[in-house]
Image (cartoon, rainbow, N blue to C red):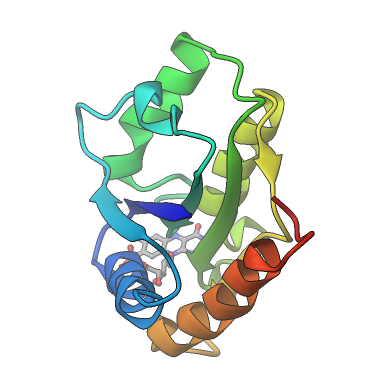
Length: 158
Ligand SMILES: Cc1cc2nc3c(=O)[nH]c(=O)nc-3n(C[C@H](O)[C@H](O)[C@H](O)COP(=O)(O)O)c2cc1C
């Protein structure tokens, strides 16, 4: 099984979390790619094979928005909707409860868009609160280890 981690970030916390997962889980999976979304990222990135799972690891910026680097992909999925029924994915949503009701909204918005397109989320969306946990990496790794073990186990969620 392979994992593609798509990163949305403004100041690299989400990127470091993704890279920590890549390192920690290297022995568990055949390949782990970390992809920093950019202006040219389109929905094509979500066309993965049956042996691949996607993890969206994104922070929240502005007023409960998807970070700027992930916005082109988010917008493309709206402008050019595609059926994503074969996509299995997870979400790590970084945020800060200091921002109140927009807490972790970037990841939640992205999750909702994938759900609208028929994609199948494996497990619950995982939030990391910068007010409680300034260092997101160990949190992300701990969650990802359990999450991956869940869908790798025989008869697991895959
Ligand atoms: C200008 C700005 C706006 C933010 N807005 C929100 C927000 O609306 N909701 C939230 O949960 N976190 C918000 N955050 C907190 C970030 O999501 C959080 O610090 C996160 O760890 C940043 O990760 P990154 O370095 O990967 O971008 C904001 C941070 C900044 C600097």
